[in-house]
Length: 396
Image 1: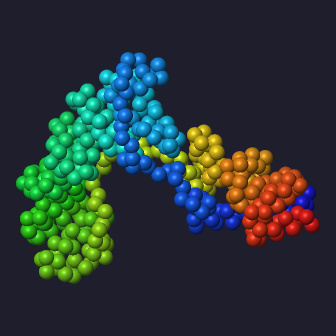
Image 2: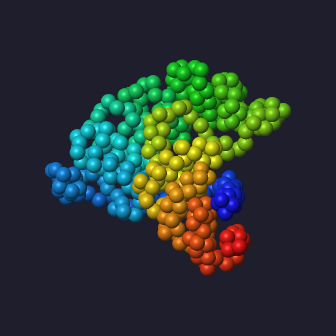
């Protein structure tokens, strides 16, 4: 009994060190190398088209015309699964605009922009009423600097859904960039009329006035925008610039205290682009969410998220290690041992995993096995003081 209590005290001490590392560094940095699991692929793959159509999904053959990723097997498992599901939906329903659009959203979320554009173009062709397809095509055009095409696509989206504030604001922005000030002013004025309690219309109108060199008119618009949203740092910064031009230096300085140059531009709520953001998948995204839940004391959510990662990648070291730590703190030592043994198998050189595995074994009175893990740890990390001290304690 004394040995078990001593081992459990050691577990608590070791886990406390681990949690301190979690708070300061994040679990993914314990391994001393950048995690690649959550990185999103760039436009590193040309699309490939199949040469045959028909019942492709049932036959296991690619459906003709569907944009595909060449290096699919190299992707994060969650990203790969999302793409495979999207492609399968298009194979089953090649005439369904929604299936094409959802695949386009997955590609856009993971920065396969050329593939996304082809899918969204097909969705737009198949469905002449849904506003999201021309809107997302407009976002793609804007991101590559084709503001005239972006303006045309945003206009099409607004024809399909005139009340879409995000599309109206983006339309005004690209028209302003294109130097079409009258058209930009009309877009922002329409936005201000449709949403008078929001800052976005006056903010856009102020920017148009600023481009025209009318600081006084710009200040008036910015004041209305700031009254609608006092926390909008972008508006505060632009209003300060207008005040400086008008010689109102004291007021400008007070505003600058609330903002700084380079403030990230904001915009209206954008449920369409939110769907793209939500579509971002990746094991590292889940690991980060689980780590945050664990640090916040929500062990149940953390456990569920780590388990979800392991469903996709049974040898994911971070998920195995963190679950082992979590189970150990809950005195679920047999489950902790199982996770940590898998973590050691995934990364045999990991001192942290072997140390916690030894603690888990010791907490079950399996001292011979625990000493074996500590000796294995010290073979490749002879300066590990905690392991050496714990081994000495066990041997005594």
